[in-house]
Image (cartoon, rainbow, N blue to C red):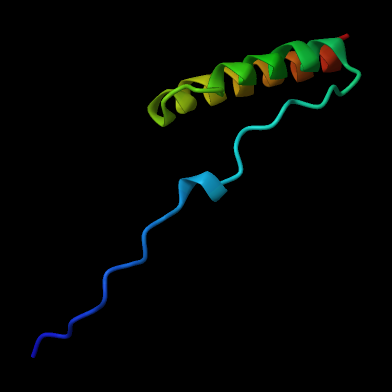
Length: 69
């Protein structure tokens, strides 16, 4: 017995929320690192992981530096 399902409706990508501008935090080091997120605009999704990893590492450095200083 095979159960048939209707195909999912098409996705309208025009209704999707796109990237937004990064809101300044007031912390120069954090704002500088978050500025790297601008690289995501227009970049293929496959490239997003690398940018997120760079931003994560940069935020960790800023946090470590502020804890040490």
